[in-house]
Length: 370
Image 1 (cartoon, rainbow, N blue to C red):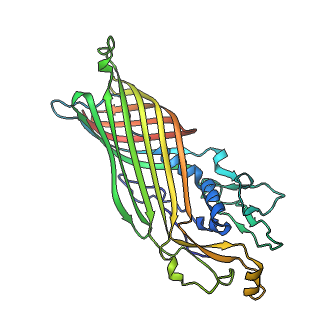
Image 2: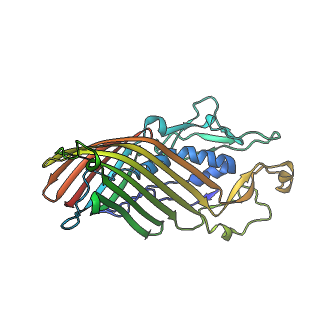
Image 3: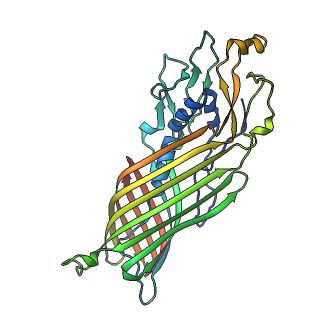
């Protein structure tokens, strides 16, 4: 099939120096060569490291101290620029085609390993798959996409916080929906609330040099590519009954949505210059990837198709609307430990979080006025 470069903006950045960190997701639509059911299984397996880790990463970076901003005589506040990164485990950099439960496809070479790269895997080594023979008719195999050669998922974030009465703190992160060149648009928002609970615990409420709080926070991220004609049938390779008006493929696009809710119990020291902080809680994260629009998908040729096509065996093209809809989840306990350096109004922090089977590293630079 004829393909244009199918790009998806999977990262976003709002930092001092850059806006437009992007990663290329090329030829994912070729998964449709295997038909609708198998395409969803292959797409989910291929994108799983990114779909899960990106969503879980949205829940990171919400705190670098357990002490809420003060409210009187004027509310304290901060603005922090940070980034969170996770290294994709080796086991998640490839997947076994033979274990997906494919119905129409099978590994093209049964004498070699059925492992093929995920998006976080190698730029080489992609395996080929072929249709299982039907009625004695065989078809040529096609290759799955390689990885992008980057075994990490990164997410830059800008966040602000402000003190409220009764030792509460309101935190927010926001990126309005923006258009980035011809690739599409993205937007992000999040809100969190922190509350000092040490004040309510007898005997320790007046013990100095440390703080304890509860925090809950939610983040939502949305991305969509510009509509276009990314995948159209090549009539020299496929049997197209009665021909097709190619303009019907102009509305093809990718939509990605991710959400993360976190709840944390926070503790931190409260001494000049250098402080330790830690948190334990849970993450509920999910993401959805949809490929929308009308797409041509190959069907298995029948004997009548061969006759209609002058005796040439070719897959018959069948149009499918909104063919891909896959979900990723990353739920479970989370634990964070970090170090914060405070120099006048400048705060620098770095921490490590274990969540949903992955290790996430977060670092940030902020300006804090308490």
